[in-house]
Length: 91
Image 1 (cartoon, rainbow, N blue to C red):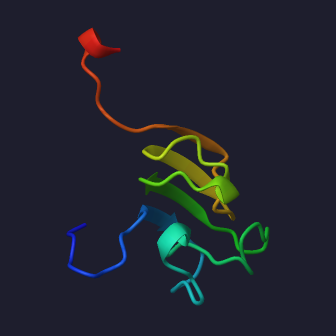
Image 2: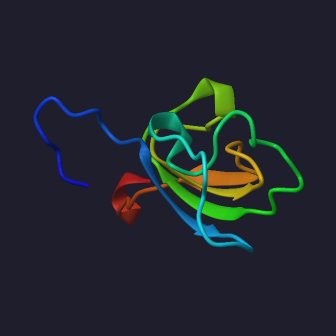
Image 3: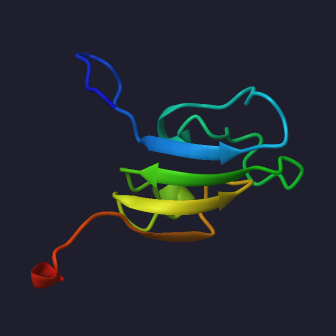
């Protein structure tokens, strides 16, 4: 992710596993190009994603700004953990 002048910042990225080609209607920014509000939490969507997120979005119950989450049919992670490296001396 490279910064460009006057461009909107990115919130992260998601590796998606979907049973179809394409993600029609996905939204950028806090939606990570993953889903949008109309298909979020829809069990018929059948999407699995691993998100690498750098913003804490309260509407998705993010645990911290820098985290990795597992997502099923939703932008709200079913499991999340802080992302980063900390030497043993700083834990």
